[in-house]
Image (tube, rainbow, N blue to C red; front, side, top):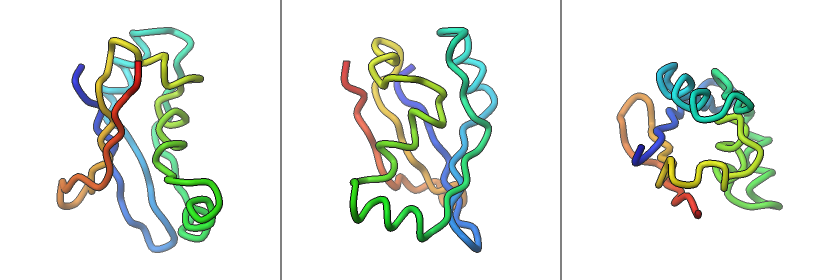
Length: 99
């Protein structure tokens, strides 16, 4: 798989991050210990505070969303994680998966 697409939606009080059911099933097939989430919601204030003190939020949210302990667990399976606006399909952020 070349890339995993994470859909990002703006809500009234924050953002939601989700992956398609087919991607969740694919991830589960790679390792039965992987437990991908259906959706993660994050308040605007939490995201902005996190980024102010720790760094880019997407770098921390995708392992939780994909249900993996270590991004290296994706080695040889995925090259990139793409965060895409679910309404416009515009690429918002991209992470190259390091092997």
